[in-house]
Length: 253
Image (cartoon, rainbow, N blue to C red):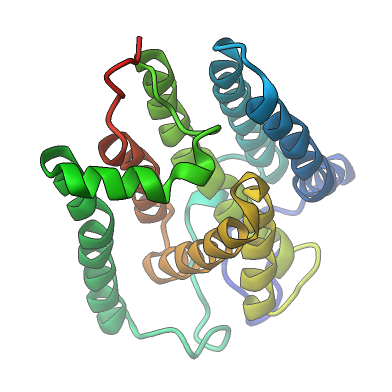
């Protein structure tokens, strides 16, 4: 149950098995996932098999959906993870309801401008497309090029948008703040975002830091809106824009 002053999460009292499942899920996020990521990334960089990248996308999708289902089962369903209500004394630094609506509107407009405008320009302006390709050069081993890879990337993008928000914002934020650890909200946001960043080790230290910051922003949007819908939408759009920034190469098959 939520502690006094904590976010109201509508989370039922959990039996021992369910709490153990939560602990194991978090352990897999912190330890198992980064180790698997390192091994899989090495294969992506060294293998000449054209199927390796698609297999990586496929396994990633399966793992994320499985983890999301486990997270939902461990807390009694999807709804306890998808909705949140903040207590007035829990986060006084968050904006009021009126200011929250203004913030959300500005955040959505800003995200569209930052993510979609460059992606749209990359379709029509060769120099923008070339700059985008150069910016993503360090991740070429991971990003899609062929039509089949791009189709799988779309699946992975939607999967990440839905599942990572369920896991890292819906589940992990509550796990750290409400039960069983009862950390302050600021610490819960910081730790859940850092763990989210660690899932992106394949992007290097800069990528980990960037995704950690994005995790903080998604947490704030979740708290302000009280619903995972907006973070899921923004996360999905952020990943899908790669398909606009990096159109298929002329030699792709």
